[in-house]
Image (cartoon, rainbow, N blue to C red):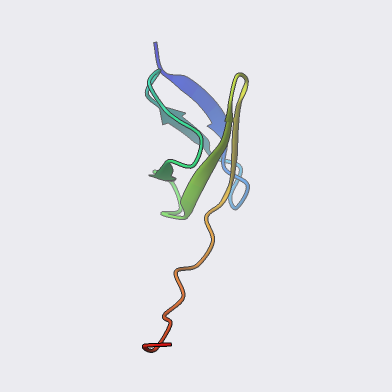
Length: 57
């Protein structure tokens, strides 16, 4: 059974599979924001951190 939570960006409903794991990245179907699963019971979502380039450092 999928779990649902609110998008922290647009407050839309976001569903993830029952097998979701902490750290998984999902997209909001309403606004397209990339979200990170921060907890699974109960489901909690946060905006995913932006990928940063290291420029070869």
